[in-house]
Length: 231
Image (cartoon, rainbow, N blue to C red):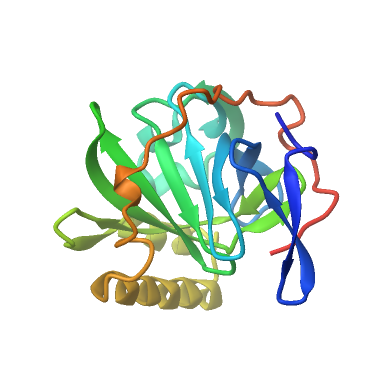
């Protein structure tokens, strides 16, 4: 992973902030819910990073860390009733599909992902409700909040994974206070969609990755504790 040397110092609001240069390779990580371990880790390439937006590219074929049941069963195959209660571990696999562009604004409790069909036919935006990203020297960390929103090119939208959101509450992965906060964040995201606020009108669906970029590798210390964290 290319770290450290690929950052710039800029003045933002009278203080010094650190941003990654385009082409830098960082980690986008999620902690397990109601836990401290990282169970989703994706090496990505920085597209843009400034006081308004972090944009990264998850390239096809990238080796990632993902949660699996201890018997090797993929999590999504397990019935919902036992999906979050059976013992888990982490496994490695490669990102399949056409790649994902992820957009996150500082302090916002969601990120917006863009998906394409083969041949760069734009498919949809995906609003992933999550903890605001915490930045550290090697990337960004968050915790997924189960509930999501799919937004289509014709501006129609719909909730996703409401069943998983409800099951997570039943299984004690989020308490009533956090669930209420997630619902509030979801309503705020829906308002952005309805008014067609950023990033939806910004033309990101026409973006393409730099062909010179290499696919980032997954480091052996992908679960290391950040030395410094900021939001």
